[in-house]
Amino acid sequence: MTHDSASPARHLRVAFFSDSFPERNGTGAYYHDLLGQLEPYVAALEMFQPLEKARHLRCSVPMPGDPSQRLITPDLFRIAKGCKALRPDLVVAVTPGPFGLLGLYHAKRHRAAFVTAFHTDFEQLARIYWRPLTRILVNGYLRNVNRILCRSSATVLVNNSKLRSDVEALGARDTEVMGTPLQRRFLEQAPVPPSQQVQRICFAGRLAAEKNVDRIIEAAADFPNIQFDIGGDGPERAKLEKAAAALQNVHFKGWLTREQLIELIDGASCLLLPSKLETFGSVALEAMARGRPALVSANAGIHDWPELKDGLIALPPGQSLSEAIQSCLQQAPEYWQRTAEAARRAAEQLNQATLAQWAGVLAKYAKPPRP
Image: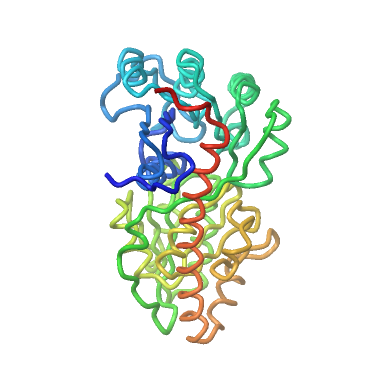
């Protein structure tokens, strides 16, 4: 492996702790993509997270809105052995679950610097999905754990500026607004030119209430000549398939690998992300990397990055999705070509800037490397 000799973090050993499975949700995908590219910037790194089929589901609890995702008890022996071998200079806790708390423990045990990343407002998700008593208990746990992690951190990393006030209220001494990385194949694979006419539109993500996929189905009824491809799986899938049963132009693709996601995006003219809650919206950045504009709710964190504006179309709270799509249909073919080039260029630049930013933040907050 070749290391970046100019990286300020090139001598650091870094441990990441996450309760998310790799690529299972937005947080899992973020760190899977990040660590795949960050390795040359540091001396060593390792992710400590649940392993597929390695732990029983006893002593686990479901995540808000999706019982298929659970907080799982860590394998303490495996993690202690891995941390002893790594001897981290800095520990990053990614989630407020058992693994995140274990990261804080090992940071203290190894006298390493400690940083927390705050990617998802789980309290808002709990308000969407869970009944009052369960919500009170879960939010009480989340608030207390997040407070412990934030107060113990040299800095708290967020991926949109709106989260700053939340983590400051939890006791964060400092905050850093971080960019979002891409998986390299989105940039390395040659782009497919957009079609001259809009014939296909896609969505990709969890089929859950906060994603507002029902709005896509409602809009599809207004455009029978356009195919709407919906990639992903989740707790709302059966309900959504039933709602779309009478429409010939709505197709559910199920859970997608990254290769299948690229194929889905490449076959469409644009991507829809009309979520009511979207901390960033990584799939919109992935669409931009493939040269496709993304129509994204104005409240999504991705709009915080002005350099991405040429590849994004904001969906205001009061506008119907059908109106927004109709506006896109009125654009000339030259618009799609121009947007494709600008979107891909902006996504690539943000990816590279994010890697450099991570290296800088790790170096800034880490304790001096030990021999």
